Every structure is written in C-alpha cells, then in structure tokens.
Amino acid sequence: MISVNVEWMDLEYSSSCGFDYLKLYDGRATNSRVLETYCGNFTSSVTSSGHRVLVVFKSDHSVNSEGFSLTWSFVDSSGGGDHRKLDH
Ligand SMILES: [Ca+2]
Image (cartoon, rainbow, N blue to C red; front, side):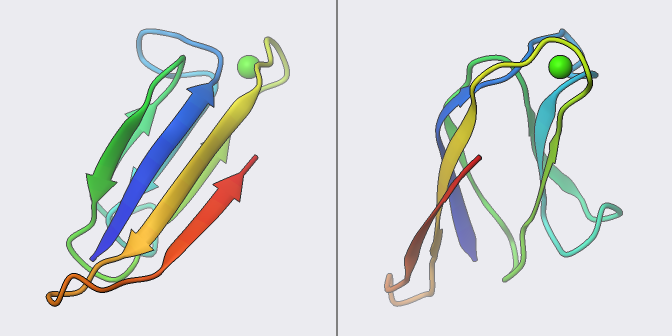
C-alpha cells in the first residue's frame, strides 16, 4: 500500500475542482478508481489499496497559485516502509 500525505497545497479553487487540481488514482492509469481530487488549500492523506498511485496535476492558463508538496510512504504489513517527497 502507498500512503500519500499532502503536506500543503495552494491551487486555484473552484467548487468542482474543474480548473486546477491534484488528483490521486488508486492504480496506474486514469481509469483507476479516484482516491481524491484536491483544489484550493487542503491537507490530507490517503492510502492506496495496491502498490501503485497515479498523481495527476492539472493547471490551466489562468489564475495560478503556489503549487503543492506531498510525501509518500510505502507501507507493508510489518509497518516498514520508505519515505519520499515531491514538490511542484
Ligand atoms: Ca488555473
């Protein structure tokens, strides 16, 4: 399993997150189940069911904000894992 933690995020907000968003899929492709769709200011963490998470960041041509920072950990049944970080 992969645990993804959005440490901070500042993206253009809309009620449907239709303009700029960060979307996490529970798998390797965009036809996988959507774990979360984020926009605006948000911190959260989600855990995948398997060993893959697809991160999609979309930003359109107008209204830009600071971006996001997330970390992820590989979690196994023993509680061990690895920890990484992604800034954009
Ligand atoms: Ca935008």
